[in-house]
Image (cartoon, rainbow, N blue to C red; front, side, top):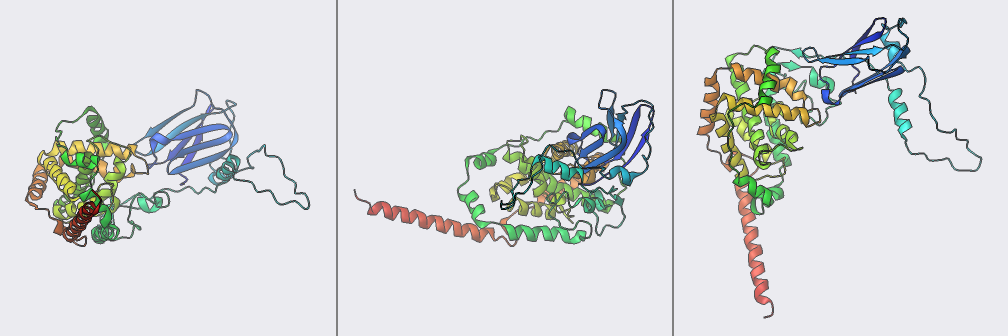
Length: 432
């Protein structure tokens, strides 16, 4: 866990904490204080402050969060009003435990000739370990660079964030070193990894023996929604104060390309869940969109689409070529519906990132929130051009080089025919 940068001021009645936690998951924030201890927890942050005197947990305390600055403000009541708390600037001392936690565990005396007792770890052990954990305040360096060789996030101009959090977000992205990985290598690394992890048996099972849910997904009709919901409008109002990084026409095209694989993943999730979000929806969208899980950048809508297909045949529960074709048709319909429909889809993805856990909400700050601002102001002819390019693409199995889907399916058909022949022979040999 990361120790956030913080400061403490005081009035006659309260200690006033200011805690910098821009990447905190607000919904899971916990703040506790009593006696000489103050504890703040909001993944990936944890702060434990040992106070020089006593505080009181009563109704006069309060806390608020400023989303613009990513800062928590907390007012903690003093037990004795008017008391002066000395040393609030001495951060190192405030973070240092003064004594071990009290324990009700009886002392154990080893009797000669007896074996040493074997205790399992208790809740008291874990509490004491947390109490004594070393803390080093860390400010996450969020750099906005004009060097597009190794960045990520919106327009690939962010750096410092994921590197600082990598120990906490181990499973959030597949890219091992987001801070030093060249952008122009990520898309190919993503495709190569998908080829390496492709499971032919899984693919053949979903092709020749689809279960009821997969068959239902193949029959679904996609109705594009082009009106913003109240939740969508509320989110867009919240984002109205967000300052957007300036982008060139070339960057705008690359950003538009990233919409392709993100919306492909969105359409895949929708088609396989009857267009209702599930607990797996956040995972599905992130892991099927190379722009998210690999921080990739694509030179064309076609490249983004093909990469999305690779992921759809190597990652999720259902891996079926016909399903990819259906999702592609949904994607074309979504882009053809225009800016508002795409905005609505991005709003839904944004909400899924907040609710689905595993630090996926970080994608909102790094990319999706800016995408929502960008898509409202970018020239709509750019989105129309991407839509036109998607309409011209003739997607085939051969486009996914390295998976050999045609020959794999042919082998599967031959095997199925041989099994059928064997079953016929067995039935002919059976007694009448």
